[in-house]
Length: 171
Image 1 (cartoon, rainbow, N blue to C red):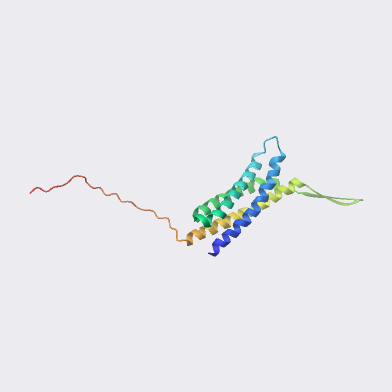
Image 2: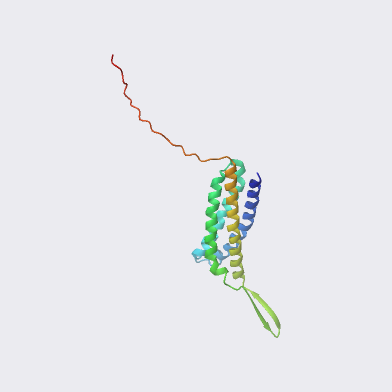
């Protein structure tokens, strides 16, 4: 039962890191209004919202309904892949940019931080954390399924041809 408690713990951590991601990205979706945001922003905005709903649902419903852990594991692996895609899409915006610039003059030293750049980097870093968290919860769910005794059985059906005629012996 330790894996069930770890699963719940990691689900709570997922929820606590997912909410800031879509909060940050909601800022960028709202910032371009009335225009439509670009596809990258929409992708990395929608995936965390769907993942939040999934994580919240499975956290509440797993113990109550006996939700099959194998399905949780498979869908967590799907979100694992979606977050990898989001990290790849955000990498050009977050990875090679310098968000802090400093200048030195006779008046002193001045440090200027670019807010948008820092928010992209925060969303990217939290997305990478989600990659790890969804992989961990997928493995924990697979472990719970494996130890639950659930087995997928493939039933082999044999077709026996039987005649419908009555064979009577004539004496």
